[in-house]
Image 1 (cartoon, rainbow, N blue to C red):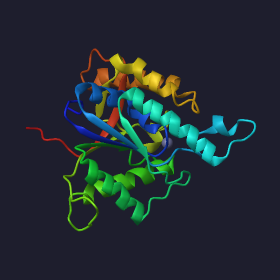
Image 2 (cartoon, helix red, strand yellow):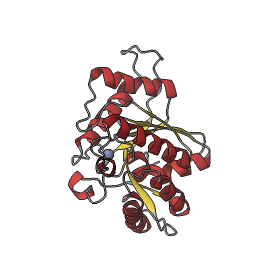
Image 3 (tube, rainbow, N blue to C red):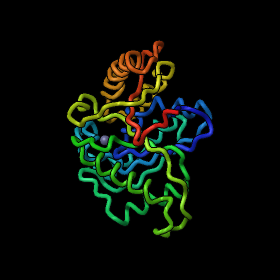
Image 4 (tube, helix red, strand yellow):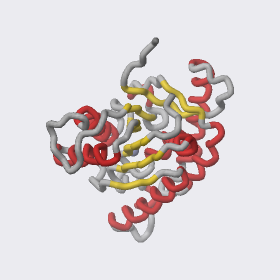
Length: 242
Ligand SMILES: [Zn+2]
């Protein structure tokens, strides 16, 4: 069971809004259950995710776009009940080399998550998403080993769960969910959080549409008969059958 109290949950997001559009409902439910959620954005999504800001006249500077996205993502995270920080690595292309991977791992060792949410590992239509999860998986498999010395000591390896690809791209990215979270009761709160991400005004409508479709899958394949809206995930790892 992914949703329960007492968890320490670390959520990684390549761009400003990804965490909210794909996992916002699960984050609300984790917080409501009594878990602590920290979101880390790799970038502000200043280049690829902010077309409404670049269309302004006069055209803003990149620092102005970053500043607006920072305010938006902080307001969205607050509406979900989560804390948020940003590495500001720069997007499109996002490159996370050896030194940056160690910074990601340092966040693991400092926060000590027992659950990590991140992009689908093969979200090939956006290379920034793939780059993010490659670094997150790297950190999740080295954080418990003493070989790399950082400011904090090794921590236990967390469970890693991947969230949705961009709306409409799941078949190309081979995203086959194996875990559903019922977000029916928190859909309106999620949409309220998404409205804070005003540089992407299409998000509430797009991800409500997707949640309804995932809700049907949850009814049909996960015995979630009361579920109307769901978020879909793909858990990395297998499960003990008894
Ligand atoms: Zn993104």
